[in-house]
Amino acid sequence: MDFSLWDGLKAVPSRVISILLTVIAAAGACAKSSTTQPTIGLQVTSVSPIVGSTGGGTTVTITGNEFASDAAVTIEGIPAAKVVFQSSTTLLATTAAGPAGTGDVVVTSGGHTATLRNGFGYVAPTGANRPPVITSIRSIGSRPGQPAGFADQDETVTLIADATDAETPVSALTFLWTGPGTFGGTTATTSWHLPAMVSPAPSPITVSVTAVETFVEGKLTHTQTSDPKTFVMQVHDSQKEILDMGQDFLTLFSNSTVSTTDVLHNFSTTCDGGQGRADEKIDVDNNRALYVQDFSAFKISRRGPAMINFHSACVLPDGRVQANVDACASYAVHWEVNKKSTGAREITNGVDYVSAALENNAWRLCHSSFIASAGYPSLGIR
Image (cartoon, rainbow, N blue to C red; front, side, top):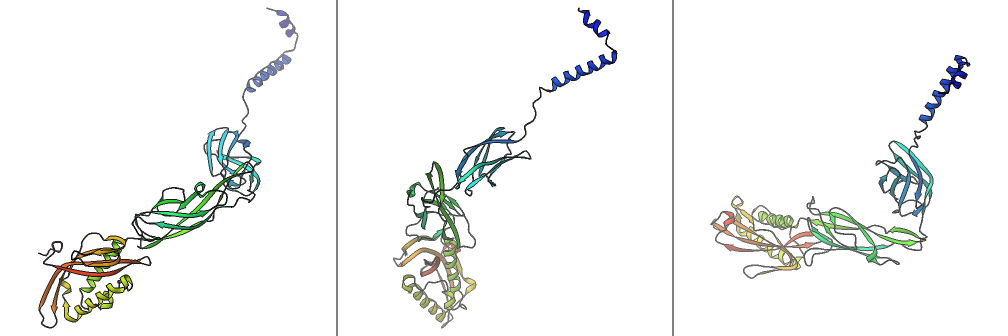
């Protein structure tokens, strides 16, 4: 051991030695604390690419520090359309549409905000490429001959948008369909499954479509969208509408206090040239002149769903034809009447065949034809 240093220290006053030891201890403490790195905090250091289209849709990589999964991004004050957290130093953001110009990129995360001044610029297309134009929309129903603009609830129809674009073929455009129900794709022709129920029925339902064009100009990918085009579909519950009208007609017919005009209030004056209504008016007038109906004895039962077949005919079991109609329905009926001239009681059972036509998007009755029978089981009559 070298005692020369110790011997030297013995000559130093004790107060000085105490100060030296304090300094040495402090120096050791400082050396120890210098190994801890200072906290940087939330920071945005770069954005790539630094420009994109005013139409939006540009995916940018944002680098920085202390990003978290709750990170939100605005670019030029506009919230990004999509933000994906990759790591504490990397975010992916998809730009929304914005005005031409340069603006700040701002990241908010963990209650803190960091900004990269003038970090991104929106560039507008020159206008040489014109947006697409949708000229019309039409529908094709699920039944042969079904008129455009007509559908039943829970039906799947085809929608066709007619569009033009000077630079891009229609097949390369993206069509964005919106409205109640579900759509089958993003092309000019798409399937549309209508809502399972509408109230009241019929009700108008509006569908809208825009066409989106994607093109490259000045090494930037731009998108531009057509003006929206709307289409109104009259949505029916045809089964209920037709069967309710037929039952209403036969019920009113069975009450002698109801006038012929009121009995025929759902009949068309133009279906089959008005022949069906004219024939039925004669029948109702004769019934009112000759008989008094016992309304309390009247019975009626629907014989299954209506058959809807546009621009067709209803062929009855006895060979008669109800022409120029769109739907056929039938009802088992039981009538009891008293003959005015003699007071005699007469009882009639049978099936009444009623047809209907669609006129101006409304169902109207067209014909009524009766075939008598001895009884009808669904009425409890033998």
